[in-house]
Length: 439
Image (tube, rainbow, N blue to C red; front, top):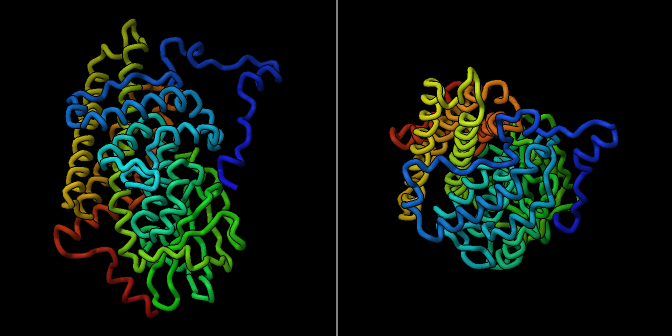
């Protein structure tokens, strides 16, 4: 059964619940008449250096199509679902209709967009909601791309057309409870048996895993001791996924702990293109570009919100936008967004030419997510008390950025990838590890 065929009806809305308890429904726009809530998303004001001029007509059209969908269909509901830490399954068909899943993949029902078009789509989703962007990126830029780059022709034909329509949703399971930054040391095992493989182990922090139809699982081949990849079906015997509760960020994303107990995977679902950990880098090189564009989009949205808010909200008899300190902070945010966007754009062009290195991708992800932290923190200051309410986007983005700052390589790990590239010296494993591993 696919995700879409098992969707439940949306929960009782807030007005009905308030009526039941004889309580008035809270309307943020009434409670704070000087500040329009994020459910009415602000117009884009962050393209100060006319970045659109660097895009093709097709890329601009994709940007506007995704922007319209996010502002109309996602902005009005995202705060409620973020607060409840639940996923809005009823909007999945809206994402499918955008025809952006699969991004750069050509054929198999996928759009075959440029890397820049795919990055722009990611940014536009993140501009409104980072959780929806993570859901989409896990499915499209990790699960689908792994099958496209590392799967057999039969696997591509079998899985990609349905995934492009989001009739089948995927997740990507590399991280383990004891191996996050040190993912290459993972301990989940794959043992060859007649007709297939037996998987044993655990995975952690796996987005979409509580409802995904197909799970891309990485495990260590017990014969070769190398990392291999496998496509595991939802409800496979021995497979369980438990939702991780109490997150402060990306609350809409359903991250799970996966337990694999003698899970059988037939030979036809072994990803023959994954024969070592290095093969995962073919996927991570592209996904790291996309992850770099997430904080760009988030920063755009926060700037847009602050730009509107400062002109609407009055204190001391004047709009907040009239005060010098507020203007300085707003301009600093704007400058950050312009620089981040241009670094992201340049990374896409290097990839197009086949010249992008892992160090360049890592530096972009690290630096952009760091600048986004600064940008969103400034937005938090500008909104004052309202800056801690999810109703005005900034507080939600402030929390959502923290896991993005960490996943796809922490800031520190990504800087070390770049450091290794520019010095020729790897500094990941201190001498302490080797010296004391024998004790």
